[in-house]
Length: 121
Image (cartoon, rainbow, N blue to C red):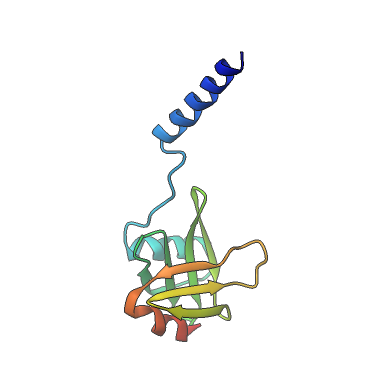
């Protein structure tokens, strides 16, 4: 009886993965990140954006000096203003720690763009 239950669970997990339910979202380009930020934030007019190397997160600068983090969280996108967040740069990676307790730190692989974007925060 236990083997039938295990087989059923494994079948459901494999089916969910095959249908794409386990996949993390990936940004297509900077315009995609800008669109998501504009949709999520009131009166946010984006000026420029930079994507992390893996495409799973981005920083979007607004014309009003606000900077938004667009980040995959589960199978959805989460957008947060990150001005004032604790920012550390190490080896081309920007680590952002927000003051939001349930929001884990974000690590963006921005290469040479990491330091200039950290300075904006």
